[in-house]
Image 1 (tube, rainbow, N blue to C red):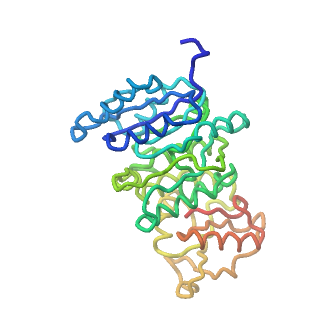
Image 2 (tube, helix red, strand yellow):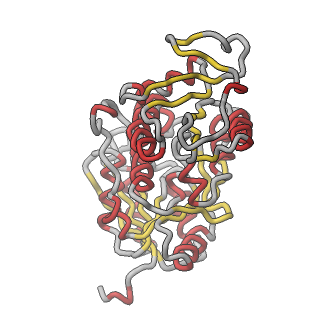
Image 3 (cartoon, rainbow, N blue to C red):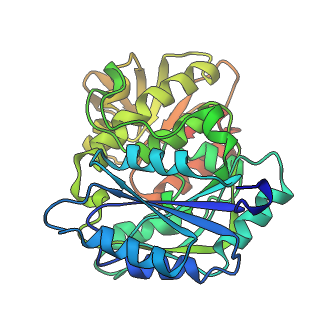
Length: 357
């Protein structure tokens, strides 16, 4: 095929037992205002429960629109299915899409325009619309709210250790980014720091940021991010809170080694049991907690595993050789309050402190 006929965007869509949601996802792509794209839809070996229905949907759509290119794979997991779709892609820009979400009409057009306008950007995401019952799925909805506050590269980079700062099906990136930073890694332990399963999407974006990738978001909604009960982030071990803590530990350790003059010693704001548990993988990598900081009067003045719990008034003004604080609290409102308090003492995210939970 001559270069002039290559598409502008390859939308890579791994799917597994997805016959019930695929039509809506594909229809949302075919309604894009940017027509110059292809869809690499990789059926990741949908099983007997699916009865071939996922593949039938893909083939029926491919007969209707030549831009849809189905791939039929042996079951190997979402990471390798995603990589296979990316490998088959022909366009200079690659967009991720999932089979249970919806693209809003101007998504591809807006993201292409941003990448064309800013050659230094490696990846562009966008705002996401929560697709579900907000009352029943409040935690997920609040995560969406938080994601939508992270617009710039700096916001994304400095909040990467809280949770994944990107909705995976909302990303578009330059094809050469895969050669520079790598694709998704199969869901097995990478090293002693991550001995169990891990979220492959979060790992990929942590790795890209660690290797210098620049990311941003368009300031408009690009997808409807649905939250069905069967979503793999709710049903698989690799998307548990423990798995997220495991995979970010190694990247956070490396990040702290470069920025904390007192490494491996840190102060940790948040002495509660749940907060402490999130740090277990990091402690296993040699992190040393000198002091906890907390506002709970029941904790202040006590010791937790032999470590003093100090009031926030004990935090000294920021100094180049002073303590480095990990803000490790679950409540987003509390996290914002703490970061504002630290700013008043001269701390800045990445310079003397960072949010990690």
